[in-house]
Length: 80
Length: 322
Image (cartoon, rainbow over all chains, first blue to last red):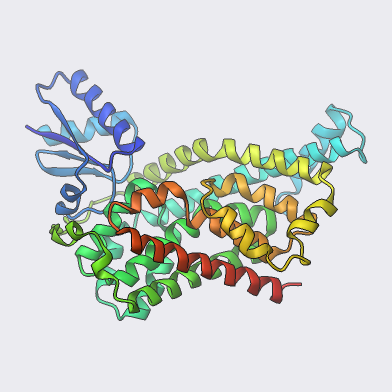
């Protein structure tokens, strides 16, 4: 299982990274959240926005940060 | 009837009824202005930003890119300029947007049209102009912003500047856009709600500061001093304010109320719009970010052409609108 936050290193992406880490801790998941600021990785996914959240390589969130519960749902959904 | 009439009644009531300020006093009218404008703008921000961000959920940049790859150049420039209106421009997304577009075959000039229009004609600028100047001025701003974006992008496309884009950009391979995210009506509404909420939390403090300064200028700044510097008498006012505005990084939320106050003191509209365009279209932080993908020379060309376009537009309005 792999969780990544990709972004251009701005405030918004950092916030998403922090929220994602909190969620991973709350769900007691044994994964390290990667924070990637290499923009070519975003482009390779076919995406043109920042930030992006991927679970197992699949983008589940693109371009904005919803509330924490919603992000939690998205991650939990990918786990099942 | 003016839909904001109740807001006027409220601010009259607070100013003259509760605070007992004199109806003809400078402080009274400044406070009346402040309360009325800040409530009116809040209402407009909520409704218009929500509507735009709802519409936007149907047009993510990945989809816009698809529209732009298959067009003839000039039509592509026009579409890119129009799409720029609804696309929010956050400096974090500028680089992925740029690379994603040129990588998938959107012509460089068309990409520039988009990159110019997106920050310059932004929704907050439009709301502020609409709220404080009315619909005609807001439309005038949008039309001239898109026109500058289209023409500058087109000219840059003709200049064949591809070698001045950083080399690594051309080496990235864009992946296939994923199947579109399936969004339900509820998703779209909640996305629009969150976007609107966050944006208002971010810009509203600037609205209050701007409206506050504007109210002060209305009441206290003598008209003569300003007119000497930036009035019709000074033929160089447009380039001067454009060059002052270009490096400034201010959001339109704070700047429009001040401009409105200055206009009421006799600042010509074209000079004011030129200043505002310079502020929103070009900013130092944005240049730093674009430097990641553009070589310095191209960044220089880009900035210069936009500045010339803005100056030209400012003069044009000063001539047309008397």
